[in-house]
Image 1: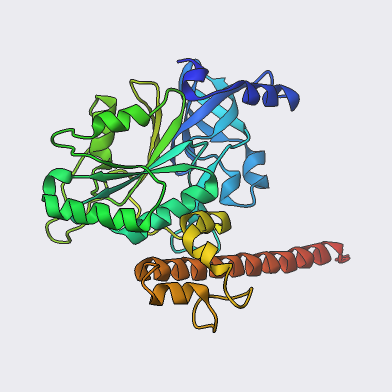
Image 2: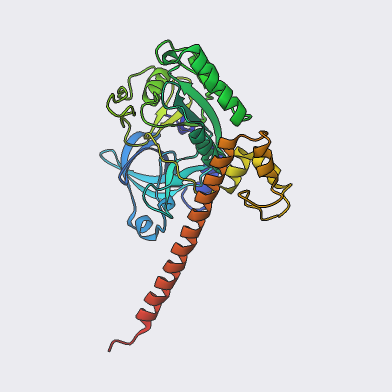
Length: 352
């Protein structure tokens, strides 16, 4: 396996030499299992751990390797490596960690594009698509919407869904596919470029594993049917994994995600809800929250039917989440600063 086939480029090689890592090997994280990593390097795959110094100096989850990362490693026999440094990331797709306010979970790194997968038979939720788009835009990752399982929806249902997407989402490619007939797969394959990295985002049961199997031409991922008791997908994929496709594209699978908490997403919200943000520039007050203020151009547009009510409400909800997340982060940093001062004061005490 050549490193170039995994997306390695001259800039990364130059960086390694500039900071004195020229004698180390480069590898890419292709899987993560509770801080144990699988690295793909020129000489093959290695199970890996980070150095004690990396673990000690890490302040947040972003300081640990993630699937998609390029890392500097030393390799040992048999098939074991030590990770010494994470090389600069071009993008980091992230969300709020589930159940841990103020913490970030990295979904994947060094991505070029994200396939946002939703099934048209029962999973379709345009609000969730807007969430996925927001975290993509905030990371500089291009989103492409894939509507799967079209064989399970009649013509009217599919037409209605496409109309909803068209009315709410602008300038994002939408592809419809069937995992049974393979309709639409030629379009998906045509947008995948050699050496570029893609990921799949979607809830459990939308057909992501089948999509990977069909794109790769191999039975790489176990697939399951929708639970008849809960009408929800079963969690088949429980970790992130990187796969090289026959056409040279690089694909990262992710676990099914129903919760997509917004984190650090000013630019993402501005792009996803560009229409609403632009309207807000015409509000009477510069600090208008678009809730009940007089002279609000956004509210006026919603009342006149020019702006979709559901999209407007989704925008407000994510704005509140972003504000709460930022407040939580600020409070967490304040407490850490106070604790740090206490430790310094403690160390200065004369205990003799």
